[in-house]
Length: 273
Image (cartoon, rainbow, N blue to C red; front, side, top):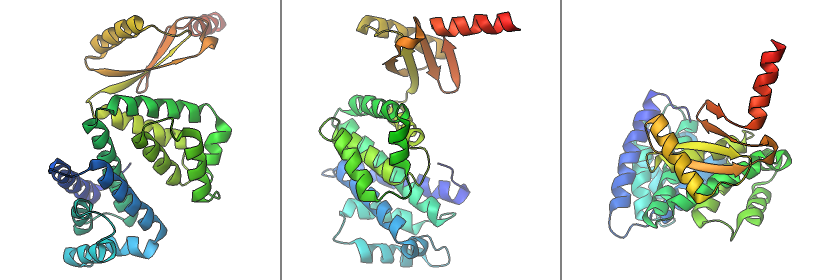
């Protein structure tokens, strides 16, 4: 997500307000997250409303009053308090406002996973969903299809993942698909994996192994990678027998290729040079 200076400042203020709201006794982060994302969907549908909420020529009070007039009684008071901050701030564009609000909704949902002790599960499930989508081009095209009705995409997501993943995982995946706007769904899902890892102040190490790793092997690999990079890494492992042996580790843009296939390719390149 790319934001200009005014939007970054507005998002910082809204994130602080979200933190205060979610820390209050009795507030359900999952409810707040769902409600904020429902408002994102509303603003995506209603272009005029989106422009009015982001209209810098009107006063903060007018914009807050507009939002409360429409949403009071339809979303909870905690969600309205976050929306007060969003509507009361100046954003660089209406699109950046909705993108910022989307980030707040996702953050609230991940907070709910943290508080319920499910953040590890959600992170792992998001990773696995990402790999499923990235490995199935026809599925990704269907999920990214601009011409496909939202309800058809929602039905597809629920058919694939309902009752198989945590409710937070399903909600986040569904929301990414519905807002894909032709952008790569797999890339957007990958960003969610990063966000979940960041909740625990960890980066992601994507490990592809020729065969399944035991718990002991994963623990040793994790220890070595943490020492190598000087920080805690969230290890996500998938199996690809075509590697022939060994494994490949990706951390950000860096790739450590210790696979048999990788060594053979390197040898071929040296022989060809």
